[in-house]
Image (cartoon, rainbow, N blue to C red; front, side):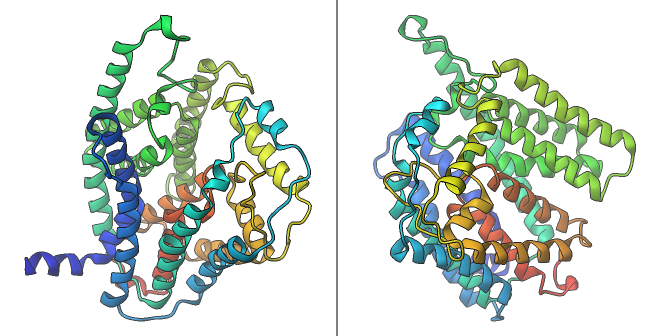
Length: 418
């Protein structure tokens, strides 16, 4: 037992980063599994993930050497202003009728975002702001090579289990489908009804994007080519079942981003462009190109633009310097864009801080784009791109903590990071 505890303590930072990045996907999967087949009461794995993350962060303070990092403190200020605005800030007022916006895109309005106010406050306070304060006080050293190996093995196990689970669920749904009880359903592509059977398809499947990075890196280094090609095909299958074009585009953008740093041959660029265009063509053929089809390409693009216009052009009392409280009963959603999230909730002050930190990360890591740095950089790239089109920044645990860890690592001499 003492040997196990000693091993955990020696690798605590690597385990922590793995938990931050993959823990939510595993928690969502376990909750889905319980709701679908087991029905065990009080099996709240997502709450368990959040509580353990808080305790895990607290534990880091005692096992790491102390060192201040002003950049992480600046990052924590964005969340601090957000929390202050929720509790004491003026509630944002929108001048137009919100229902028209949702009717245009075939979405039924409901005030779920307002009802999530307390939950959002708790997540940001205990799972984002608190870990950032901890990381501000410690010298977070990490063996990136070990982190990569643990991540690969975990993803390898998880994707097989998830593929079996989703395949069984799909077979059951197809077997029990009765056309006379409702309209014909599709379980493939953009109009797939399959994601409706999961509590959070994006959170459940996001780890696949990260595993895609590792498969590509392995193939590029000519390591276990057949196995990693199989995993890529399995990832594509799961993405098609999920009906999310966002994940496809994210993987394609990751390849393009990687190619600018590492790949030199022209045919590689051609393959990447062909891959991207092929995915685009597949989805256009599966979709009816209507803005009224929720989840379609047209719908997603125009809806994101409408959200931005909705918040920036129709807000009558926005505090441009320090943001406002956007949790109003009359505001049914959030901006779905990292920059707009921060501007609305922490003002230009938050935007300036984030821009400074992003440029600092780029300047530091652009010269370190090699193994094992490139894996962490690509994860950060994916989390950032994803946040520009989906999710709420102030609930995005992984992006905030990964950014803080990269800022912390940037102050550690390169020879200290394996």
